[in-house]
Image (cartoon, rainbow, N blue to C red; front, side, top):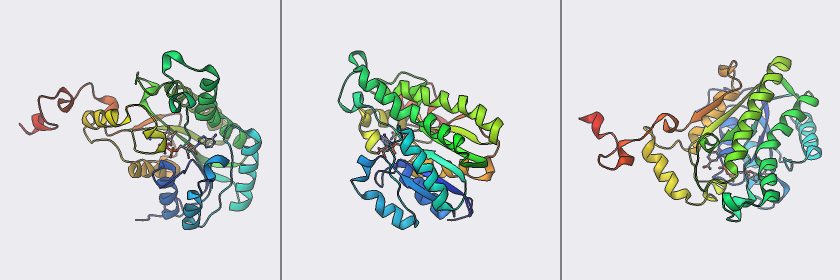
Amino acid sequence: MSNNLLKGKRGIIFGALDENSIAWKVALKAHEQGAKFVLTNAPVALRMGEINKLAEHCGTIVIPADATSIEDLEKLVNQSVEHLGGKLDFVLHSIGMSPNVRKGKTYTDINYEWFQKTLDISALSFHKVLQTCMKLDAMNEWGSMLALTYIAAQRAFPGYGDMANAKATLESIARSFGYYYGIQKKVRVNTISQSPTVTTAGAGIKGFDSFFGFAEKMSPLGNAPADSCADYCITLFSDLTRYVTLQNLYHDGGFSSVGVSEAVMGFLGAGEESKA
Ligand SMILES: NC(=O)c1ccc[n+]([C@@H]2O[C@H](COP(=O)([O-])OP(=O)(O)OC[C@H]3O[C@@H](n4cnc5c(N)ncnc54)[C@H](O)[C@@H]3O)[C@@H](O)[C@H]2O)c1
């Protein structure tokens, strides 16, 4: 259903790898809500070719960019502004990768070169995107820049490895940069802390199925699906959330505020007590 919430808005969407990607769903909904945008991903990810189907559906183009490369980002931002015919109103950073997690290195036996890559790809890249947009004056006033994160930034989640440190840095970058961007250009900067979600990045985490199930049982509403995460992203790109900035916003079915649930304790089914 379209309410044209993003009519006339222009943006860049990072991170649509395949149809399970959260960014893929955001692109579909942004298109439905009347936005124009460019899709981008790392050159290596584009080899899969899937993203071209999405671009065709959304009537747009794909511009390759490694989000750790300032040179690539400058090209991407300049070409996007040119292609879209004006400055940007929204940017989605939906990027995460840890070589340590991917290669099964445990947190207490970490490879430090890979750790730096994790931080560069999953956190510093957001700073690079923000700084590039600011230097090129590519954002319109009241624009919205958003990154996706996970609650392992605040709590210990074994298996999430150095991604937890990257997410803590990512959230901190949103606050620090958002301060300056707000004053300079009224651009808002936020992170959405999403439930575990079945995607390529999600499924790469050791024990993902178990902690997906655990979070499902802990959350009064159940895990938030990727589609609903995309809806939330759209609201943050829209004019309905103009004064929301420097926030880490939980989109997790209530998980972050629950100490323990009956379902997890195991002696009552979920919701039974409230029925009694
Ligand atoms: N899946 C989950 O359980 C979950 C939960 C909370 C937050 N998140 C976050 O959501 C975001 C999107 O992940 P997803 O779950 O949709 O998985 P995904 O694997 O579909 O997306 C991750 C994307 O990062 C891109 N990427 C990796 N290195 C890059 C680079 N150097 N330059 C540009 N792009 C690069 C990949 O190509 C891919 O498109 C990530 O930040 C992830 O940490 C995911």
